[in-house]
Image 1 (cartoon, rainbow, N blue to C red):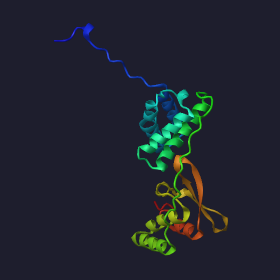
Image 2 (image 1 turned 180 degrees about the vertical axis):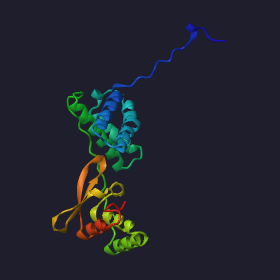
Image 3 (image 1 turned 60 degrees about the vertical axis):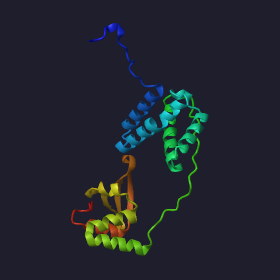
Image 4 (image 1 turned 135 degrees about the horizontal axis):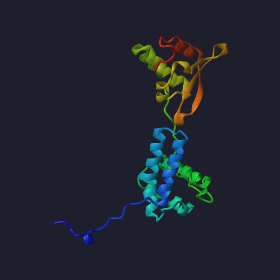
Length: 213
């Protein structure tokens, strides 16, 4: 039997906090700037799944309550969660960018100081010349294209995703036998990558017209 209307419990509709509304507005701003889907996803996850829940525990539900002391507590709480210094630094960089945007928008009078997270110096492992030559040779035995991909990454510093996005017209032949590649990297930012002359010539001679990907 249905309950009379007077005995029904009304559950209030959940509403966003001012802090969450500000976060959504920032993401909309980044989207309007043309940031990549991955960048938008990372920023949304870092703020809404990691940073904001900690701020709520500190009683912070609006941007104006974010102080330098709160940010110090946030950095400590993130580190205590077992995260690496590099991960904590990434979260705090996003917080800093968010707060700077709020300041530019007039939501904050000034950007509170964000603590700097110290990170251990890492020395990346690199291939020796002999190891690199063996890697290129092994790739070339599979396919000429594979060898060119390895060389563009090793000799021009391209990322795998950047190589995959190359088009025929991205190879630029300059005067004096010089070559460059027009590369679109993170955040859809375009740059020119210089190529060793022999690599530029090999890419130009590739049957597909300069697009080994």
